Image (cartoon, rainbow, N blue to C red; front, side, top):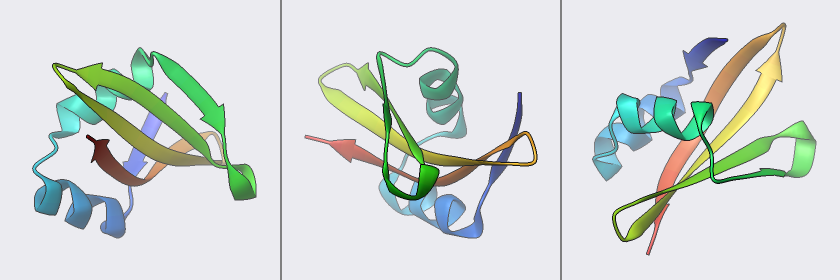
Length: 72
């Protein structure tokens, strides 16, 4: 699976102190996966007491990370 981080996603990861490794783990082994608007997919995975959500879209067989955030 090819993965590309959008500029927006890179900024949000730094801002929210989310590691790229956490994003990869969430996409590779999600505990939940849901379709969203505009053909996006939201992957969810729990890390300790918080849930990470990663918003993606597919373009030309590449998974593009749009954003990531932690739910409390």
